Each structure stands twice: as structure tokens, then as C-alpha cells.
Length: 242
Image 1: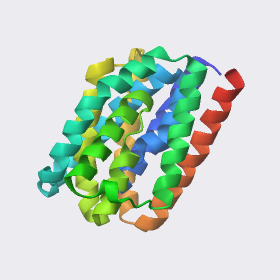
Image 2 (image 1 turned 45 degrees about the vertical axis):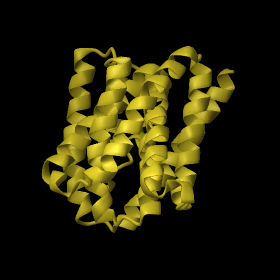
Image 3 (image 1 turned 135 degrees about the vertical axis):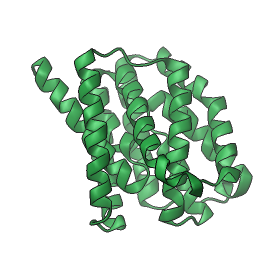
Image 4 (image 1 turned 135 degrees about the horizontal axis):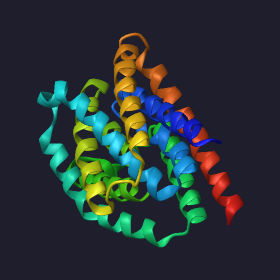
């Protein structure tokens, strides 16, 4: 694949992920990380996912910050801050095939858990927020996929979609900022950064338009099926390279 074709593909992947996240509050990493990891390699792909997911979360938060539940978000973010460095360290120690396998397993398992709406007593209350935040921080910095743990916490807390979205956006800003602080920005060319920014912007606009026209449950189901397919593909490539 030529460099310009790869960069256009990257922009399209980011546009799709940004559209999904703008519609549902999470989903950028689930949809985009497998493809970005295959295209750029695990370190750069995950770091770019952290950048893009944080940016689209910030854009969504500008209109929904008043609905953020700080009582739940503070323990979630605090626990994530403690495990993000560990996730970054673990990712730095693993070879590319092992990272691909790990990312594929995490994405596929997380997708299946959210699809099944897993409920667990351990995810209730303050202890549940700490457990979900710790798991999310580790997964976000190591594999770029921190949203499912927070989504499972919200399911067990009985939050509605309307309650979940602004809180997920707030958390997305915080945990991705932590992850990038621990690992640094991805090393990309100026044209790649520009195309990524175009993808984020266009995806946000498209996602906002689609959110008013597509039933939320249908959009969420599509996101999870795409994520599951991407996770299985990434896992397969990693196993082939071992």
C-alpha cells in the first residue's frame, strides 16, 4: 500500500471511530484500535487512538459538562491514574506479535462483556468505581481500550444512556491525558497529523448528525459487532506472527 493510500485509510478509520464515539459516548477505541494497530504497529496505533479519543471526548464534553457526576468520576479517574503507568510499562516490554494478541484478546473480550451486559456485585458503589477505573486505566494505556470497563460500571450502576454519555466523555478526556503523559505522543508526519485531525472533525460532525437519526440501541450493537470483528482480526495477525 502506498504511503498516501495508507494515510487516507488512517483518516477514514479515525473518522469512523469519531463518528461512533460521538453517537454513543464510547466506541472510538473499540472500532479504531484494531485497525490502527495493524496499520501503524501497536505503540503508535495505541498512542494515536489515545490522542483521537481524548480529542473527540473533549469536543463532546463542551456541551455536556454540566451533567458530569464528579462523585463517580473522581474515584474512577483516580484509580485509572494509578494503573496507567503500569499499563504503559507492560506494553513497552512486549514484542509486537504479543502486543497484537493482547490487544485482540482485550478488545474481543471487552466487546463480548458489553454485548452481554455483564453484571457483577463488585462493580457497585465506590468500590466498583475504583475497580472499573483501575482496569480501565491499565487497558487504556496498554491496549488503547479503556471504555468497556467504564461502560460495565455504568450498566451495573443503572445509568441511562443520557447519563452515561457526558460522564464517559469526561472520563475519556482524563484517562487519555494520563495515558499520553505516561507514553508520549505518537511519532507521525505532519500530513498524517493533519489527516487525523480532519478525520476527528468530520467524524464528530457526522456522529452528531447520525445520533439524531439512528436508534441508540442499533448504533451500539453495530459498534460492538465491528469491535468484535476487529479484535478477532488483530488476534489472528498476532497469532500468525508468533
